[in-house]
Length: 267
Figure 1 (cartoon, rainbow, N blue to C red):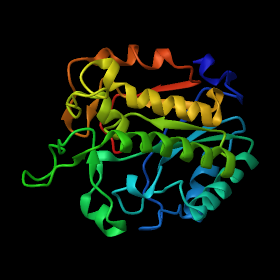
Figure 2 (figure 1 turned 30 degrees about the horizontal axis):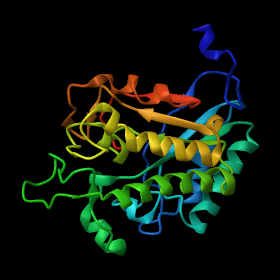
Figure 3 (figure 1 turned 90 degrees about the vertical axis):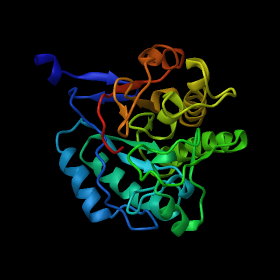
Figure 4 (figure 1 turned 90 degrees about the horizontal axis):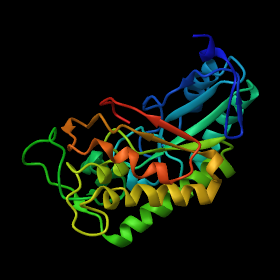
């Protein structure tokens, strides 16, 4: 246990110990503007930053309004959101600690009625396969087009730049787990595409790899982390049999932190 409390260098971070706060969904944002409720969120993270040299990873922040599908979930696309997050990041830094923002898109996890209310956004996924936990008569998501996939790559990179360059975060963690959009591409239970983004492990990994590449180009390899859960479930849908996909894609990318998780949580 002694090593758990010994210093370690991770990218540009000089951590005083190896206990990291993992992302925990909290729904502490305004209903439809998705702005973090600063008093609550700032207190939450500064309490956990009390020991200098601690690394915190926030709950998922959604990359764009069309990537939401939940009320009260924080975002990182608007000026108001960025301003709120900056106050939170600055407060953590004042404690002598570090903070990464987890960035995510919902895909088929979204609630279509929320997307409709917030701006008439489409309910999308890699393939038109609904969650097994939704009603049997629920409308399935629409499969993303190639131009839409390219847009989502760009939205991840833009969110990363907003987080680091404008909100002052030390880096971002790309959410590729728990049934989020990138995980939906990785898992054959939710991706039955027959184009370059489906089929083989290499093809199913393509979207996630393109996101990683775009984010590292936007903010740097040393500020980029990834969360995966190759042995978990995709929001109650049992994953396919090819659990080794973690060995293929992200071993080919240079990223500073790999957070491998096996669970079935919401974000």
